[in-house]
Length: 436
Image 1 (cartoon, helix red, strand yellow):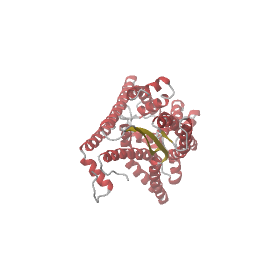
Image 2 (cartoon, helix red, strand yellow):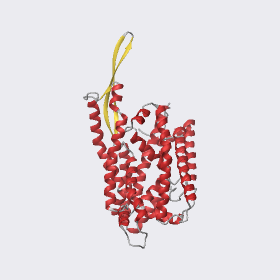
Image 3 (spheres, rainbow, N blue to C red):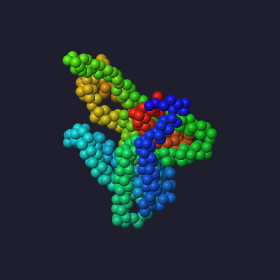
Image 4 (cartoon, rainbow, N blue to C red):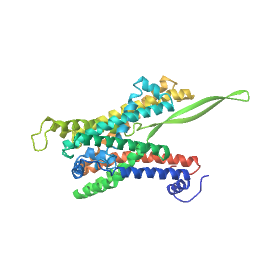
């Protein structure tokens, strides 16, 4: 029964959540898993000069952002240095391959059993991807003079196996949260890593802005507040497509026609953060390759030194290409996801139709046209967030703003999704939730 109270809505909702034993148990379980995750991020691996590694990450904006997503595990070179990103990469690859490969498409259509088989394939694909990323990370750090030069093949293999085990352990923790806790476990793991480091990042950003001029500090604060508002609006933005249903029921020997109406919420950002992950991986590739062939510091620079310098995150070329890639990946991935949803066929099977649009192909063309148009706006905003380091540096001279923008986009999205799950749990029990 809904409780009448004069307490603020959010405060009362938190009290109601804590009063429900099952929700309290889920929240405590989730917190316990996150505590384990934080312990794991502080277990270091051998073979790296931590002081040099921290200096390198502080000077490289891209690696600083990747380290943020792992909760500082990459900067500490811990067993969880890769985070859950090999698993995310495997999941993205599987999502792209399912509609292309007929065998995988048939497996995906087998319902829950088929989804379990797809998940097993994704887990198996995570292992070689984690091995490749582990070796690439070690090779890159060695090229930058961060790792100990005397790493033997046996020690290197040991580090790679340990990093694979760390990634799979984090994936397991995430799945435990999904099964027994609150929210999507993998997203919560990433969210925890970001939230842990955001206070220090904001502090460093404000200190850096203060060291320059008061105008830079004011611009930094205004841009940060505006960014938070825009991210919330962007994450929640959707277009409602009206749908009507007509069903026939047989009662007392007579046929009755019933009708109802609802809507399909087409999100402006259907692709989420996946386009950013794709684009970051693509933009990181040229610079990573160049580190294997460029001359060390102190020698005459060659062609690969030029490539490495061009693909640093503070160059105009990098940001123009990054902007274009985010828009392209957003449009492509959104259409892939939308095709997999197969909304026109689902509507037809359930007796639903869009008013004024014929069922079947006409409905598919209509929905495809709408999703393309609204996705352009979402893609532009996502690309703008992606290049905010370049824009923020030009306005405030503060590199930390860009890292904060990408991190906040992820953190706000995960927080809103988790709150919606809690809202649904409270509404089911006839409590008043967070949202109006």
